[in-house]
Length: 517
Ligand code: ADP
Figure (cartoon, rainbow, N blue to C red):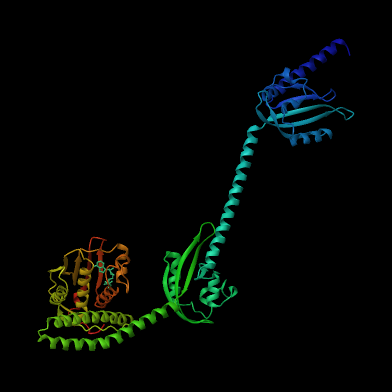
């Protein structure tokens, strides 16, 4: 080749190399070339981006092995991969932790390609690097979030399982039969108590419709109707009584309660049915009522005789001048009367219980009856003044002695439960087509949560029962008498602020109402 030609060729080559260098410097990837034929494979070229990524200058890069980028962080698994690929003369792509000149870490996505000569030996390596710290951090964050999430899921699953076991142990332990039903009334679950009570196996119950169980004992139209309303309306079934001759266990009285249940995320629209066997409890209550009835009858008969004799003695001693004797006889007759009243009340309770209380209805002067009842209480108390205001001005058709008993009871309670007061007021009025009686005292009062309970039989307010004698049946009998006349009896009161017991009676009964209950 002539010199001129050579010069021109050289010029073209150097021009091309310049252009390539410029191209490499324009790249945003860091690029290096190492010379594999020199000891320790030094870097012989780096582009501008490499300087920028690493923070080192060309002068600090050229001639060095690229391991300086790892500083002391040498035990990275990616290096083993790199070594293995290079030894095999292959391309290698790794992600490795590198450090800038100022010591800050960056993740380097490194692509190393060997440049082989014609005999196959590697003369050079070209390394292309990209700073992927941001992606790597995002990945790391994602990973850590994921593992946190997994941990939370594991914890939640664990706590759910524990909750489930906890609930299951409660459900199995309760001494009540429990059934869980699907929305189409199929039995999903029965607890041990149910199986024991009804002497059935799980197979005989679970998966079958509630209404097909046993000999169809739960297939009761009213129960069906109530259960059907639970899911759409969320209205529970409360204290539904079922009396049935059950297979294997005989005649039983059961109390049913059912509620819609929902466990978030697990299921909704299920029905929990609780079945309580109240056969025994009812039998005991019945025995108690029977005893009460027999005892009061047995007591009443001799007492009536005693009462008669005391009246005779009373008449005989009336002429005698013996004041002591007269006093003793009149006290005896007072206490006999009191005993007689107590026994009558007990008899009333058992009559109400057995449904055999009889009302003898006849029109009577209501206000006059009230006045007489108040007079009888006035005679028995000199601590309180009983005042009557208002009037009903009506002939009421009802059982006079029973209603008089109500007035007497309310007045004597008003006196009894207001030992520190002197006033008891009775107010008569008509309200629409009802007559109304209100008895107000300034006594101990009754807290709101007891307002209903005081009308239950044998109920007495706890904190005062020691202070005042009584059996807790007076108000129960009063409420029944008023109810049987078509009226209502209620109380308004606050503790320490006295009480007002009021009742209403319908006036339209005044004419021609039947003479029975
Ligand atoms: P007893 O008076 O024999 O206990 P009652 O049936 O008449 O039975 O009354 C039930 C309970 O109601 C009483 O024990 C008492 O606690 C409460 N009670 C009744 N009347 C009053 C009243 N006027 N003031 C406060 N408490 C009353």
